[in-house]
Length: 139
Image 1 (cartoon, one colour):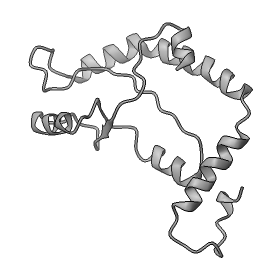
Image 2 (image 1 turned 45 degrees about the horizontal axis):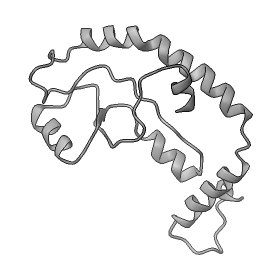
Image 3 (image 1 turned 180 degrees about the vertical axis):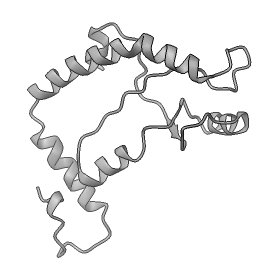
Image 4 (image 1 turned 180 degrees about the horizontal axis):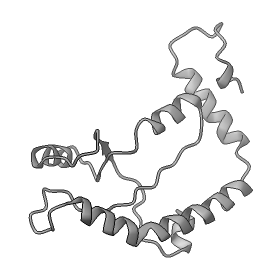
């Protein structure tokens, strides 16, 4: 977030995302129910990476490049592949700059304590006794 701020990019800190199977757009009925659940974002690409990272005790963050408003917004242009690709191309340089700068910052951090904390949390989430060794979660 610090990187996005420094690059003067518009972003939202936090939120609740729904991941649907793609490639497809959600129906109005789906969008309305997701909205009623408090979803801020409907996405086709956040799973299963975030779950796998958590299970492995790996620090993980995601960036969503919003390409369109969902279909429940009657006053917005109907989503289409052309609109999505146009918006994506217009914003791709922002993502590239964000990732280049963020990776440089990430490389300067000491992640040892955070990785140990995440591995412990992942190990504690597994329903087996402590006598079982899970090699990738050994701190």
